Image 1 (cartoon, rainbow, N blue to C red):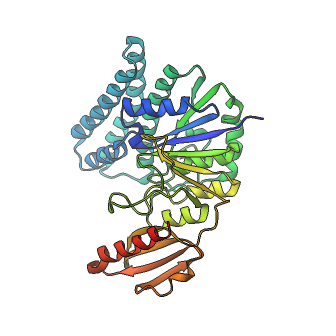
Image 2: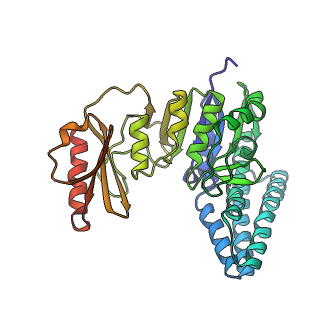
Length: 374
């Protein structure tokens, strides 16, 4: 193709309203080679769709339909904030109404049978991404001279039929992308599509698992041989620990694929655990940054990190055994003398089991150890 291709994914908090979408659209427009934009559902929409299903399951159909109307009104309000022209509003309202007819039909079916399957939920979940990607594409059309094409991810993200946690069919995604994506990739085109959703061999809607939009972006990046995948969220990169739980965290400038994947698998929330697998297979660098502060340094995840002895980050996971605190980094052999119960280790991690009463104290001690190697 001869074109440098980049993929950008924007999370729910980054597209929560028209103002937030505007920041993301400006960020897209500022990058000449950004070719594909992957959009999550607007903030809290997935939770609202779950509430609709739960309410319908209880037989409260009228209440469930009111919740659908509320969802429609919120997205129509975003549409109005994006473009208040009568023509744009009418188009937006018709599109959103058509999508949410599916929600109403599903609510009726769930109410009648008083239960829902994972297949039902995937059909419901996909509506959030379809609404947000439509709105974002309309906003982008107002801000760029490039051609903006809205694509349905279900036409090229292929999974098996494990509803709720579809297993990506990489070869099929590659073949579908050659037909559905690659012919439209050019310097004067931006493709907008959905994260999280796909389809099986029967054409049924599937999802990659909650928070799976990051994974969608790297699967697309792998399929089109992207030079970079960008994950834009509400934090300025991957931190040494969850910034919501500790004040003195710092953002890590770079991580290896193994380190970033391990942090995610062991509890770090900033990335979906499977995100780095496609990027590693193709050697595609992944950038994690803040859509609110795109000039911040962010975190670059790639295969050529400078070797740095000691822990780069700390993660927390509560499982059936208890509280698991894990140090992640390179050359962790020097940590042998730590006074904690070690319950697991890998080439880039060491995990400790911590009692409830000692959790805060141990967390602070281990995080200070990470900072001492920063």
